Length: 313
Image 1 (cartoon, rainbow, N blue to C red):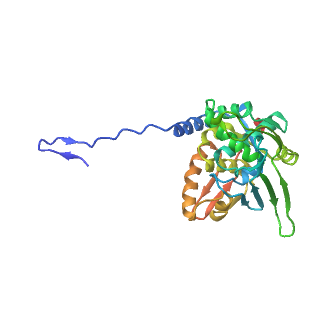
Image 2 (image 1 turned 90 degrees about the vertical axis):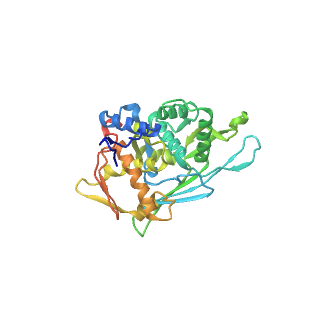
Image 3 (image 1 turned 180 degrees about the vertical axis):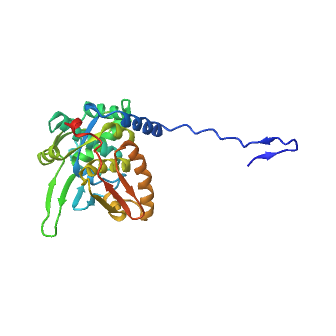
């Protein structure tokens, strides 16, 4: 409202100063603009196994030792693993892979394997370079230690993949993503955590990865690295939208979406609210994504993939 005194002078209310953008907001805007105007080059391409584009790990750390996720006829079951401690020579429990860091490490491992045509990955310099490319700066010791803990969780876990396209038969693969690894326990008391220095992807996983690797835009991953849900939505749309018939659509009701993404919410409407809010952020980094949403669910329409096929070759 305005105030008017006896001299008929109108006093306008003070305009509050604009809030400066956060680092995350600035990064989202910057990468969205680049993605809209420049096609990804070879160094901008990452890869991820389609099974992890269709299902999701826990968004946060959990004490649970077994996880299950369902997406249509695709099912994922993860069992937290163990590793031999190099100092005590005893078997110790490793945590369940979870959160943003586990997602980024899996993408790094898949990307390195596809780009270098090898199942063998040095988890030292290659992971540091990957994180530097995403963050725009070299990770410090504390950040690297946290990522190494998640790398250990992935290397020790057992993954079971199942598909059941009809009620008469089902196909199941039980495997570890990593079949062998060297575990290291640093002498530095500030970095006392088990972490793998070298890993070899299992033959089952590596062979299917070469067939079912989904190209992703690293620039979008860099923009969305603040949110596990945003990464999950982006990966899902990247592998799903380009497979829809151009003359058809795919409708997914909210209860199924919540099941697929492992919703931690007690109320479906709370999950729906946060999902739609995050979806708006993801679409800015995947401008080709064509979909609609209403109170019943999400309708997916054919869209060009975030990485054009000729670019991904």
